[in-house]
Length: 196
Image (cartoon, rainbow, N blue to C red):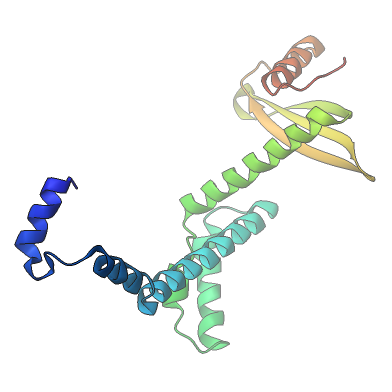
């Protein structure tokens, strides 16, 4: 707020505080900041939201690992969690369930974030180490090619194998040249050095 408007606001709304020294207002500020009710109110709510968010990510990871439909969270997991909380813990499950974002869209978004992060980490590792890659092609509905990539690299003391797949709008009779061109584009896009 502009200083001219601030002084006008002070005269109109807080006339009893006009002319007080600056130390008075500084003490009011520190008293407000140290007021335990305000701190605990925000801290508790933040902790509940953080715990619910972490649980939501863990549930999304489980759904992704089992290749289940995203609606499993709404249809099966939420009722199961409600039953456990009410029967085993003897608590009202409504406050806990509302802190868990488990809708279809939330689960899809979490799985997309997790897979994007995994891909970013893999790309960073492939930039700094030697690796081998194998590309296999399969056909799905509508003559779309399903490209399956198997990447194997050495990370410290162990070999790590990674599998990923993409639907690509290509003809199903791809030649080795087309697949190598696609691999080259992927590597160039991610600035990965490849020796063919």
